[in-house]
Amino acid sequence: MSKTTKAQRKAFDAIDDAESAAKKARRVAKTLPAKSAKKLREVAAETVDRVDVSKKVIRKNPRKVAKKAHRAEDRVRKATRAAVAKAEKKARLRAEADRAAAEAARAAEEAKSRAAEAKALKKAAAKAERAAAEAEQEALEADRALEAELTSDAADPDAAATAGPESAAAEAVAAEAPPVGEASAAGEAPAAAAPKAPAKRTTTRTRTPRAKEPATKPTPAAAAEPTRPEARRDAPATRGGAVGTGSSDLETLTVAQLRERARVAGRTGYSRLTKAELITLLS
View (cartoon, rainbow, N blue to C red):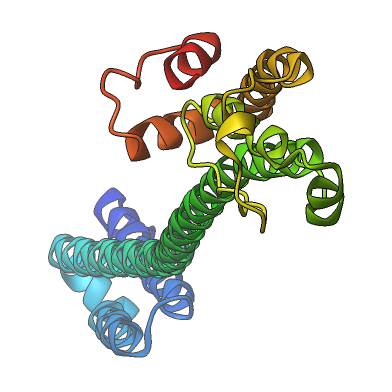
């Protein structure tokens, strides 16, 4: 049996390394995609075929066999590294694409939620605007109703104040004038007509209705008689009562009603006056 030389041992070692690299490539191909795995298996099989030499060839030319085995080993290792790098790159790109897709989906969801929120805010703003317009319209209607009510209230006290002194003066004249029958029987018809002058003085601002004259005409002698003291004493009291009644009516009115009355009476400069000054102006 011949002794194995150093060159032969190197050739055997190179063949073993090439076969080991091919075996490793086949294991790696199981984890790769189908296309890359197929190419890598083909390279591994080709490597095994190249280093499959007989011992006779190794003994005859060991250096040539060793070089061939080293080249096959390098080729299969390089193909394995390239396939692994390509698979890693592809996986990285796929992960990045998935991450980008997830971010896009999340951004779309956020945009959708923001759009829904903006729509809700827009709807709420429109609702608030409508409510504000309705409130403004109600306020305007309330102001108009209040103004109309104040105007009607100001017109009613004016009529009452105008009719009050007239009715009071008419009642005073009717109370002072004796009945027609009694004046004719006693022969004092001129005395019954005497209170006419005080009745005219009582109405300083309003028109007082005239009392009807007695049916009997006064005689010249009776007309020369002076006015009775009772009529003289009653006249100032009647004037004071009429004025007091007008002032009390004015005091019961509001400032707006007093200003309205001043406007109706044709007064000027009443817009800045107080209630007391308005009463003084109208009395």
